[in-house]
Amino acid sequence: MIDLAENQFGMSSVPYSAWHIGQQHHISAESKKQHGYFLHITDMHIDEDYLEGATSSSSCHRLSHPLQTLKKKPVLAGKYGAVGAQCDAPVILAQETLDWISDNWKDKLDFVIWTGDNAKHDWDKKEKRKRRDVYNLNQRVTDMVLDTFWDAKIPVIPSFGNNDVFPHNQIAGPEVDGDLLSFYERLWRTWIPSDQRATFRQGGYFSIQAVPGIQVITLNSMYFFNRNKAVRNCLHPQSPAAQQMVWLEGQLKKARHDKHKVYIIGHVPPSPRDYKESCLTDYLRITTDFSDVILGQFFAHMNIDHFLMYGKETATSKSLNATTLGSDDDHHLFHTTRNINAYVDWLHTMYEEIEPPREDKHGSPDEPRSPFTVVQVSPSVLPVYNPSIRIYQYEKKQKHSAKPYGTLLGYEQYFADLSKWNAPHQKGPLQYELEYSTQEAYGMEDLSAESYFQLAKAMVEPTPEGARLWATYRNHMLVKTHKF
Image 1 (cartoon, rainbow, N blue to C red):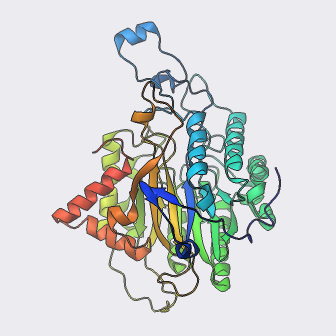
Image 2: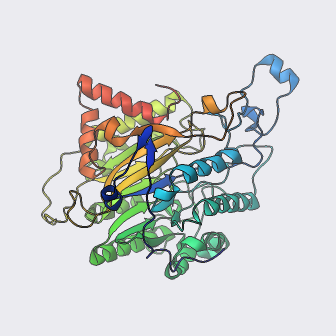
Image 3: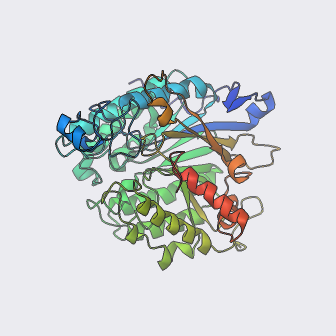
């Protein structure tokens, strides 16, 4: 690959042109200077063995047997995926998703965050995936992403997921998994700054100035993941998990010193369901302490659209212990109403228990600290529900603006309705459409922690308006597939 890492990050921002949200809107020259845009795309899970017309019971790999068809009509794989089935995504879904982004958004984007799980799951017991499959699938998706954004020189900031390692969920430090870490360092070298490559080879994480004044820290969330038995928890100073936490705090101190703002990205979101307890405690302590620096946290993995919110009290609340929710490896989590409802009830309790903000004596009027940690969890391209992507808007004007530089102003979530695109005789290419915007759906002026606190409290109010808002939020979780 050509190495642009050294000259990529001081470049002028990509010019904007007219853009579409349902109807055509024109962006004024002043707005172009004031607002920036970036893409969050995640969980593509491509499967080169996906076969249109195959049965979902075969992980969409094999056609049905005539006797099987007589007994029960099987769920068959559509052209662009099998919504709700235990199948991964056809390559055409990922490719035409990137094509749609290229046609509609590439000339408006400043950078891309790409939060992992590019390889297929290990669902098919007759065709177990191998290490080379994981590498080859990541190579193919990386080539597709590179082809999409390279000519516009748009920085892409990757992280890997629990299905991008082998065996899935398991990754140790460089003394054991140095080959895997080196593979991804070579694969993504185009986008990793030269002074961060040694760090990445040691731990799979790095930091980058995506645009002037905004640092993106991309974490290896696998070291915090409680399903990863290859590393010890954050109580052990020599563990890769603890070392990454020390590195994270150091990066945030440097950003504060340099007066930069920070976005944090990763695959597995921080929660008691998924993180080692000591790592979750440390992570929430650090992100709360540096809330004057951190303006956004972007994760994936769960496939459903939601946000997590922690205060100092709720972070250790026993009522928010999520171990009873099970793991996504126990069953195809969130493909059953029972599991969805349990998780949604847990979120409702989380929002109820968040305490109102208190005055922070350590903050300042210009750089206030929030008592909250907010984690935005984006749904997937993989059609667990309908495929989706997000476009974020942020404050780009450094002087004379109503919001501080880097403030997240909102996002628009786009989806492809596979009930339409999988229909017989439907002609492509695949098109995405607006599902909702945070401003119109929730009335949010920005995506600050304070705005999320107001939304959380409004949704759990025992009033008709609170119930309506909560119903809207719940239905967005499943990306226009069905209501529950």
